[in-house]
Amino acid sequence: MASCPSVKNILVLDAEGKRVAVKYYADDWPSASSKLAFEKSLFVKTQKTSARTEADVVMFDGYIIVYKFIQDLHFFVTGGDEENELILASVLQGFSDAVGILLRNSVDKRTALENLDLIFLCLDEVVDGGIVLETDGNVIAEKVSGHGLEGAGSFTEQTISQALATAREHFARSLLK
Image (cartoon, rainbow, N blue to C red; front, side):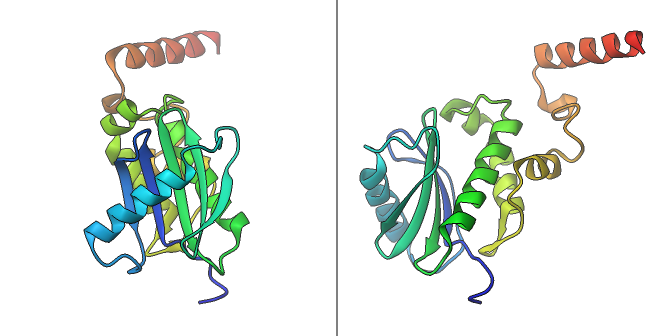
């Protein structure tokens, strides 16, 4: 499997290092306590860095970790020590872009927890069983939302004000045609 890029885990932690959404694809951490210990030590290792504008890479505990911070969320993608950092970075970028699109650029802990189902669907679209499936954020968001991005989600997923704004927009467009 050396020619097929793989991911060990994808983690989304909050500003205190607590889990928001995590998915493990490898048995490198056999128990829940070993997973939590890995997450805690990784958070402590990276919390003082400034990976806000671009992803950063670190070799940690024999793994290559690519990470990025958006608001109060910390996104991590872990690969084995033989993995290509650029592929891991593209996985991270695609995942974080898709989350940003689906959460309408309101990427923070509260919004993420309110839309946890969308985040887990993004994880499923990006990686399956550790194998990278998709790295384009727009394609991932489109697959998760179930259709094109023109409506940016169905009306059932929108708040009343967002639904009214979208309806107003569509009505104005139809008048201008």
